[in-house]
Image (cartoon, rainbow, N blue to C red; front, side):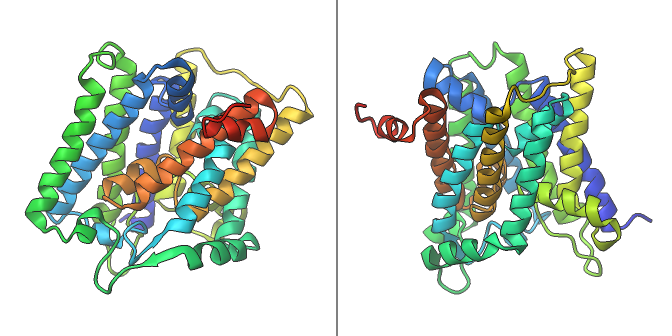
Length: 359
């Protein structure tokens, strides 16, 4: 009989493979959706993300409503709201994402396509995430986050319905309204319907998020060998994957490590089938430096904010955690700042443009 950790790893592998295919073949990329919206007034990828959020929210809350998954056991529904981590960490992650040209998930997609720069980003991001969780920069994280955390009353958590004091019926109504609003915005003008790859990838990614909760909250539920209830995120799992590879016998497989391997495998398979696999490397030391700095910011910022564009934007959002919209807004602002910097090469004009001031 397979142990819960092995089952969790296998489920993570499957869910990650779906995201890998979506990222490579379906062009699902969170930074690209922001670039399209900011500079091209093209909202199709953003609508694909909104559709993924709608599917993830509806399916995840259905699992919770039927008692299949206890979402209160997730890391997102704590008795405090880490505003400092959400805002500062989100800004750092967004800037880093812009410097690298993609997020943690996109980095794994690039690895599967043969991008050697992405391997460097993966290593720096994973190691900086480990250091922020358990090492030297962890002290900085605690010093910055703890004083700015909002403590909630005993017995409550940071779900939107808990803060509003809403019961089961009101929770269901809120979930339906939010899911319908997101799906309507994504599909109403028909542009996403005319982009079948983006449409399919949005649905698939949302379903993969819900499957992650189902896999860790029900399939692997064993009181003698507990597995953390979680879903897809691509900051801490990169560090866990490096730690597992380095220690092997000193760590054990989990859903997050499986998802990391799955994204790479899914992207690789999609690249091979489309004959798009090719080796790529940095043009010069300046580009390598930018990628390494960006990866460092993503690793530290992602741990401070407890997630990335996938972890907070979809997984945390599907639990109705209020940290999700706060973190995503900070990531969007950071990404805009970073993108402006990559175009101007200077931080001050980038900050001015971010706030709409003339240079």
